[in-house]
Amino acid sequence: MAEIAEQIAWMGAALRSSPDDDKAAAYCTAHLAELHINSLAMAHHSSVAVYTGFCTIGFKTELL
Image 1 (cartoon, rainbow, N blue to C red):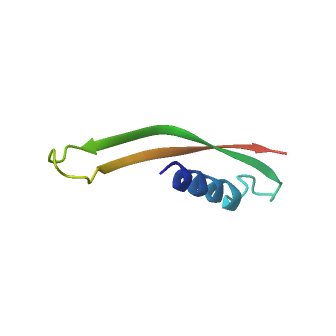
Image 2 (image 1 turned 90 degrees about the vertical axis):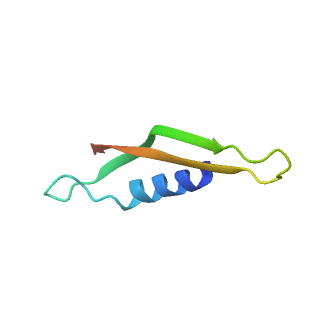
């Protein structure tokens, strides 16, 4: 799950457009603002583990 969140954060930062109307270059970094992972209880004899989760990714943009 961490690898997927990392790839989504990278794509979001890399493909974000500049907030400046004059098309000035900008530097964007992503950060994990929130992460929640839950596991569901399974039967004692089961070898299956089920995890669910979600995360919030924030972006900070600075004009160069």
